[in-house]
Amino acid sequence: MNRVHDLLTDKPADDLAVIDFDDTAYSYAQLRDMSASLARHLTKHGVRGGDRLVLVAENSAFYAASVFAASLLDVWIILVNARQSPTEIQAICDHSGARTVLFTASVSENARTHAKRLNAQHIGDLPCGEILVSPVVETTPEPVLQGPDQVAALLYTTGTTSAPKGVMLTHGNLTFNAQNSAAFNRLQPDDLVLGVLPGTHIYCLASAFLPAMAAGGSMRFVPRFDPKEVLAHLRRGVTRFPAVPQMFAAIIELLDKSHETLDAPTLRNLATGGAPLDPDLKLRVQEVFGLPLNNGYGLTETSPTVATTHNDAPRTDCSVGQAIPNVEVRVDQPNGDGIGEIQVRGPNVMKGYYHDPEKTAEVITSDRFFRTGDLGKIDPDGAIHIVGRLKELIIRSGFNVHPPEVEAMLTRHPDVYQAAVIGRQVPGNEEILAFLITNGKTTEADLKSWLRDRFVAYKIPQHILIVDAYPTAATGKILKTRLISHFSDALADRDRASANAP
View 1 (cartoon, rainbow, N blue to C red):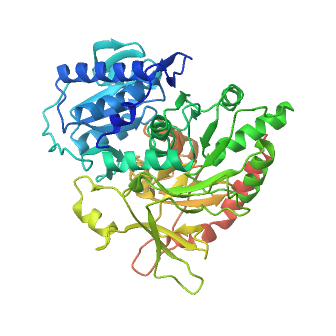
View 2 (cartoon, rainbow, N blue to C red; view 1 turned 45 degrees about the vertical axis):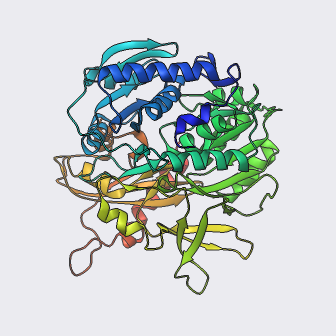
């Protein structure tokens, strides 16, 4: 299987493929036709094999058709959440050398706003929505390879720094993960997967959507998470529900407040990942849903799955399970407790970072293991435990947030002199804390309002503390590891205020 669109080729024409945000159902034949039609329109617009195509999207059948249309054209698709800011999207367009930008305008007001800003033009219609694309720009196509090493997707792990990282995932990477995940989870043609995770995130793309297609099952697209809506879908035939821990917590909260029971008779698989799993939440989910909650581990660079637990072997701890078939995991330089850096090798590992061979060389070892930057250990039975991170990376509600990116944006504010951003673990999630030195003319509320116009919501710090000075080394370097203890009184005041808030 050399291309992502090959996942569709052997599926019965009349079988259900996707259910759109408006409840319109599309068969595999219709999805294939929409993908081919979109490919033809993009070709007429000037899109060529090897071009980079940005898709500003929310979950929808149009998103699905776009993924397969790009595959048909040998185009690198760049998936961007429509809720990202113009600054973030422009940085991605500039770094990737994108030929044009496509929008899921029929489902997303944010996408329509971006389309208008970028002077998008209407070039046709699909049954699932109008085709809006920005004017093409002069750019050089990348070489097209005939085998599975052709890049399928370019996913950015940061967006507004001077050097955003574009992860090159090949057709081989994505089809391997799709088929492996489908087989591991025993997905069947009668499976209906709930697609409420953002389709622009690797978790939804490669661990929810593409596995459903590989199995000949179907995907119900939900553009944005609302616990009441998701609960209704769970009661209407969904068999598999992949989500981040915060989604499960919100559903349980809704059930508790409304004194309802779950009542989802067809549901048979729960999966979580993308954020730390709190043991208490895991127990509560399993109690409410009556199913094991399968915890997994992955990264964009590993497309994404490295390890996951299985219904047949439920665990009482929060291990992420054993490495999936055909993927190797080792712990590099373990300490006395067996803890070291998790490293991964297999057909799931990315081709590299786009336009950044030096960074690629830093993270790929001479024997082709990927350095995850995560700390973990492996039990005698092969079960993997993630215990921390070497990197500063913050995982907020399942999304990667890089402190330098947030710091760079904050220091663009005219009243901010310096910024130091770190993460802090809270039950089931991670908070973003920003410590700023300012000229005294701005407030936390002002800064958060300013950031909302420039950042997607999950990158905005939960707490912004304006301080007089940082704990520093003799060289003047900020000692980030001491920020929480140094400002413990101020943080304790914030925590008390949050706890007492109505």
